[in-house]
Length: 340
Ligand code: PHE
Image (cartoon, rainbow, N blue to C red):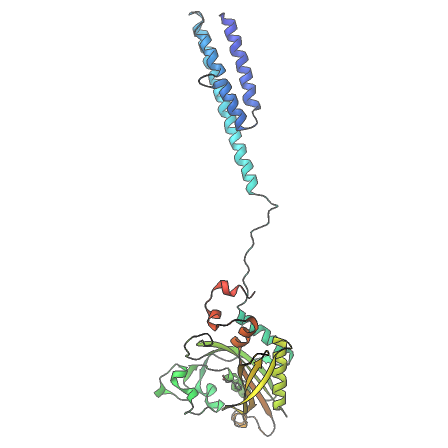
């Protein structure tokens, strides 16, 4: 074979390989071109290499040099193109990850605890009835928790086993501190600091060392109400509690008073509510005992008042059909999420 033929074969192979590499649109067509031209067994360059052996010995060095140049050039053209295509794939897959039309990742918004929600609703309902919110401390003295409420020293409600005292039984007097066992303490605090008329509610935690079960928990919440004015009667008490119950639970709720006793109200009642299927005790109420009014400096001949104290957990549980008070304080989001 003459040298010119060999060189022109080589040249045409070079230009077709070059254009095949340059025009390859993706890695598959580039690979096909690589196999066709640079393939180790049946590639077209391999075929030209075989012709090299059939050249005259004198022509071999020139032909061989040229052959090596072409081979090197095509190999590097191939590598360049391969790198280019790889870059393009990564770039385009980056583009797929950032798709501005996809919906964003949403935050799971939290919400208020069902007891907090209940408290907010109760404040709103009672606010519409003209009651403003008063607060008192959770660490309370025996005066406000017992003495001022006419709960005598000997009363079982003061039993150390029924209260979280912050001092031993032998050290107790009016100043003894305890975690308040009822929100009635706030009645006293409000009347001590405000002349009549008063119309307040107070919502907050109270503490009693009860063993936790489906209906008891050593910490729970009460809503206390107090209204003192001229000529306040038991009928006002019942009207307010009925309006309150209907606003919160709806028209189907019934309310009943059962005679009872509290040292700081006279007469005293238990407040029951019913939804056509038996009565549920919601708390206590009554007319503020004249002795309590006197103790805070009010004139019982001038003013009368009513007070009530209801369990917030009971109200909340009844509304949502919760049957175990402990669920409210387990802090299990699967439970809490049900009350958005
Ligand atoms: N403080 C009472 C209790 O915790 C409830 C109550 C409040 C009763 C106000 C009468 C008046 O049981």
